[in-house]
Amino acid sequence: MIYTFESWQYTVPMALDDISAGHRENDPSETSLESGLIALVLRKLEEIRSDPSSYMDEGGAAVVHELPGGLCMKIMHDRHSSKDASLMNLGNTVAQESHFLRALENFSVSGVRTPRYIAHIESTLPGEPNIIIMEKLDAVNLQHVLNGTAEVPENFDAKIFFDALDAYIQALSEVHHIAHRDLEPRNVMIDRSTGLPYVIDFGRARSLRGLSASDRRSLVDGDDLAVEKIYVAWLNASTKK
Ligand SMILES: Nc1ncnc2c1ncn2[C@@H]1O[C@H](COP(=O)(O)OP(=O)(O)OP(=O)(O)O)[C@@H](O)[C@H]1O
Ligand SMILES: [Mg+2]
Image 1: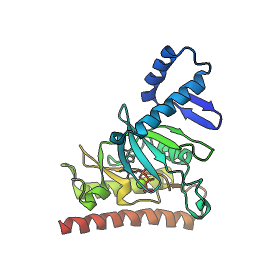
Image 2: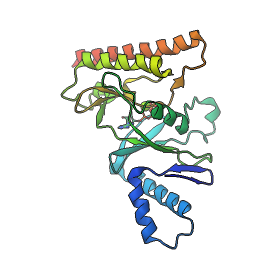
Image 3: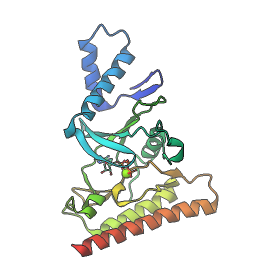
């Protein structure tokens, strides 16, 4: 379901639909279904966000919390309204990042894929949250493994893993004309059951369409090199163990 309310656009995620159904029954006095629903969804998200047990992880741009129904939400830090916002490279908006996740929804190479996209909430006013709701991966962050704070899953095989990651990144540019541009161990996860990679965080991704051959080449080469660096980081960490 998609709702628009003032500057906000909402797609109410499936897992939250039952909450809104309950709300409709319980509060017939609500005059505007849309505003009531949106307020309810936001309250629910706020509740979840302030529950410390829902916290999953965070990066430089966002914090990620668990949602019911096997989902999670990436809540962007409000950097756009900060004083020095114009000096920062803020990366993609949630709409742009969601666009990449949606484009890659059915794309899988050598068992590698991105988290499934569910919905996003985008605001145009400072202080309102920008959120992406997506599948919660049952996976371990590669950076955590390198830091020694997480165990590598049982089925992990470095050769299979890095060949698969390499094949995925090549196909990403060849088939989808997308460069990720932020391939770091923290943006690669390891599936707990298969040991295969997930590529996450398209917050810096770019479309290669319409670029000159040399610009395209440099972005594609940048991604290839980044995968090699991740492999070297893995080798270094595993020889230290
Ligand atoms: N769909 C997901 N399922 C499970 N964990 C996730 C998911 N998305 C993100 N995470 C975890 O949350 C962390 C932060 O998410 P993400 O990388 O998207 O944020 P970011 O702030 O854009 O990161 P960066 O610092 O790379 O810019 C990830 O490193 C990962 O550990
Ligand atoms: Mg990240």
